[in-house]
Image (cartoon, rainbow, N blue to C red; front, side, top):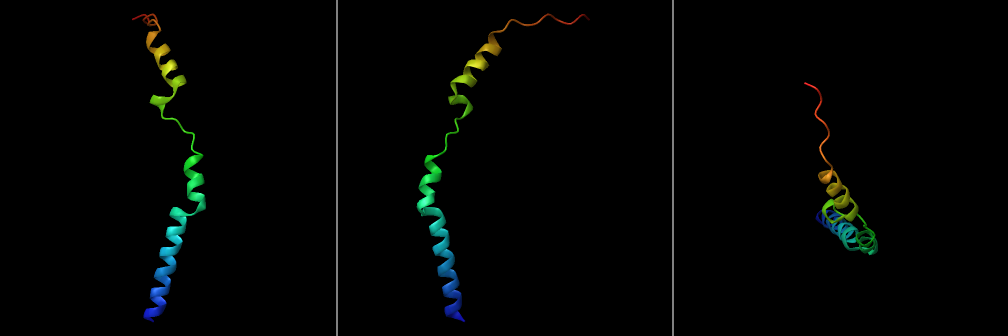
Length: 61
């Protein structure tokens, strides 16, 4: 029984290590192209345009 538990534990560790450091792990980290909003030039340009617009007329009270 002890050998069976040791085998299951070793297989579990091996699978987890394969998932973490296997050949696909390197591919997954290099294909990310997401840019944070504060690093995105288009986002910053649009944000600047919004802040530079003159205020609209106040609605009648």
